[in-house]
Length: 129
Ligand code: C2G
Image 1 (cartoon, rainbow, N blue to C red):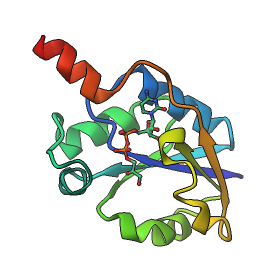
Image 2 (cartoon, protein in one colour; image 1 turned 180 degrees about the vertical axis):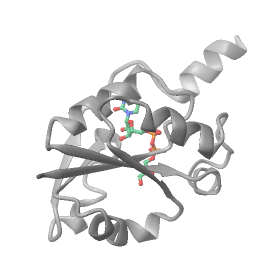
Image 3 (tube, rainbow, N blue to C red; image 1 turned 45 degrees about the horizontal axis):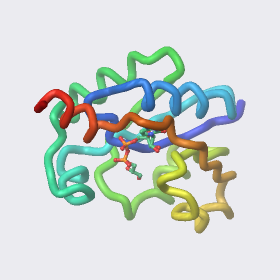
Image 4 (cartoon, protein in one colour; image 1 turned 60 degrees about the horizontal axis):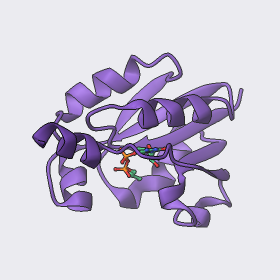
């Protein structure tokens, strides 16, 4: 049983999010997703997400490619999360390329291409008009 892990905020869930979850799951038999807390997103991006962490957890956990979810409350705890969930593979989008290579002693690290032309920020801007 090969466990894959990935992390993200998944705010205003869109097809780019769906595709990375589908692709991540294809690297193993079980996909675990660390969903950023509202506070962690504020620290990363300087704003609170549109959807609350409980809403984002509920959405991500309902995706058919996802087997388990948990709240990620600190970027400093990656190594602990990888161990706690028994990750064999860490999958992240190419915007994170190289950033998690330090964990290659505990699991395989894979960066997959982002889906072009869609992001939470763009969706928010489109709705704002
Ligand atoms: N993504 C993608 N294509 C897009 C948009 C996003 O493949 N068009 C991927 C990102 O590369 C990331 C995942 O979807 O792997 C989640 O994206 P975000 O919610 O923006 O995640 P982020 O806030 O960058 O959090 O510890 C790492 C961070 O918590 C990642």
